[in-house]
Length: 219
Length: 219
DNA sequence: GCATTATTTGAGGATGGACTCAAATAAGTC
DNA sequence: GACTTATTTGAGTCCATCCTCAAATAATGC
View 1: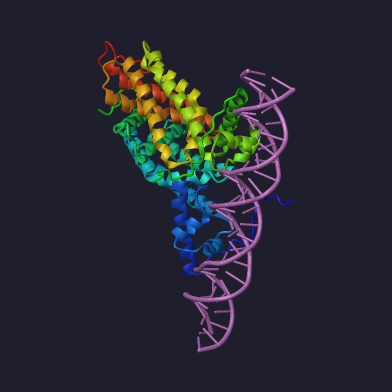
View 2 (view 1 turned 60 degrees about the vertical axis):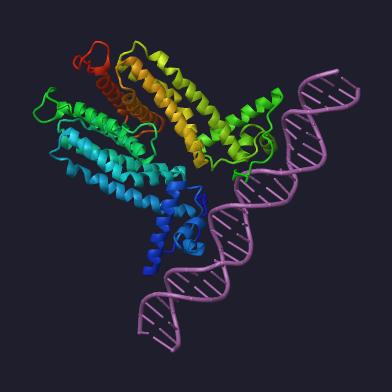
């Protein structure tokens, strides 16, 4: 009995006044920053409270335990990411593969901090990996849809495979831009180039009124 | 004074008998497994000792503290990776860019568990990032050298940029193969294809007796 | 066998960090 | 202003985990 192995204490206790809502925001913001830079385990509840300008008791008023803080953050990040990807296809119409490649890269660079935070939060528990998979599923689906808008004849399964590749490629770009990247200053441009080249090559056969030649080659 | 902020207690105390050396091996193996799967923070010294079939006192005989265990693991992994990359260029002669691309992918897939462990270990301390950067520098240099063996006219800086891109691409492949990867079964092949395409395109102008045409296009 | 030294053992000490709670304070309502 | 209820506070409890150490045991050399 009691299938929950972790100590789930009393009711979560939501904020009912504007002061409380604001406090929750501050606490989550502080937790997000700290966990993103230090990781879940290395972040202490006392630190979270301190950075939010609150005391530890306030933190525990709104969150029953440390895991609940991570949960709340995961929720938020996932929701926003899903929205972004769902909205992607609408922007993709009437674009060349190269332009789409560039737009995708831009989008993912923008989303970088959020994804980084998310993966730091995943450190918390293994049973959250299903959530992560779900998020990635949305991302892949969103990108695949955009690809098929751009290249209507594209098979759905293949579109998803390509989308997965592009998604991960962008993950790499984010990594390059985020770190100090001491050895390779021109690498990000090279990566963009690779991405354009790849999308160009894979989407060309399926574009309207194209056979296999006349791909612009980008320069 | 005392520039070391962390508690570096008495002498590290190396094993002097075969039993001791073996114990150290067992302890490091256990620590490597545990930290790779659970992360540095989540792994306890008691667990490490237990999995190695030793008691906690033995663990502390050979390692002054938990961080030293991580340090030792980092050392080993780095050394092996450096060797692998340094040896790469020798295998690269007389290969087409496509073949080189495939070989690089194979190599990095092989190295995956080690790199995974390494990155889990990095969780330990920020001041180990310089070590990580050094390792990546070796990887990039090794791959760049292989590229220039394959395409002699290639500029060194460009070779490093391309090497960085390829290295990260392979990181992605590793990720795809490691996780369950529920949504995308054909993605690894797509990634290989992108890699071949890219290397083909970038190396073609610099190959012996080539100008810009006659690139195989892989199919 | 005996002496010496490496290794093992495991019961604590010390610390840090998650979490509690009763009392104080602030905010909202009438 | 008086009353109710949300929020804040922070000292204190509890427990997991890092780490110590003196005594027991095993290995090695003579």
